[in-house]
Length: 296
Image (cartoon, rainbow, N blue to C red):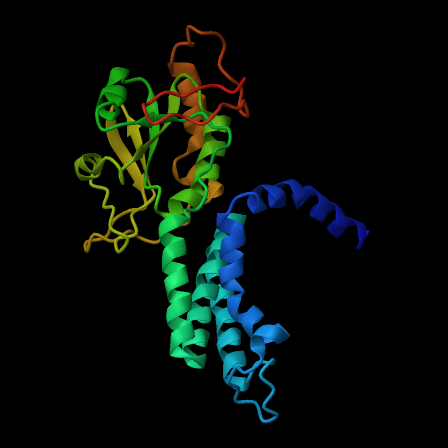
């Protein structure tokens, strides 16, 4: 069993790994994250590189490089303690590996450091992380539809995510929010999203800062009767978000989703289209114009 279980887990993860490898972002990120390792360890590349080793071997790490790599490992372990999804874990590894690679390349040769930094900037500008495209039951709002939809029926409770596509935290939370919408969406409890990176006036109207320094993205707001009754994360006096983990368990507990779901089913009238969808029914990704489309 000690051998079978890891093998089964590996086989189970193969489809997901294949989907990742099919997207240029992940293979290119992995290549940049391991660039120094390749340059230092591959014989055709490492010949002639400077080294502080006593034996002068240019194809092996010197003591300072080992220290930097050990420090990188410690930082990644600390950051991943708060990571929820696999994407967050991998994202932390890629980000801090690139920082360590830049330091190591600059230490070897300033020209190599500048070349690596240029490659990272070009990659950042041309290759974006893939957006979540899985099943969900979420309505996407624009700046013109959000107020109208929230006020349309006061009996409907809304949980709205304010997000931006450039935010890695929003991208990591996307599959979690989608899963919650599949489990808890009903005629009296709806889930919505609005891109405040695109509709800046919405961020001002609902007091959600898009600055990376405030760490307010993503923000979840609960609307009952068309009025905001709760939001996470909370904001301190300096306008910064109070630290809060966007896990499925935290959202269910903080927003009392189980209780809201039961009350919404009792208080709201059934949909004209037919019986309510049971938790777990899948729907296709929403569209920016505010529509949602069920998966066939």
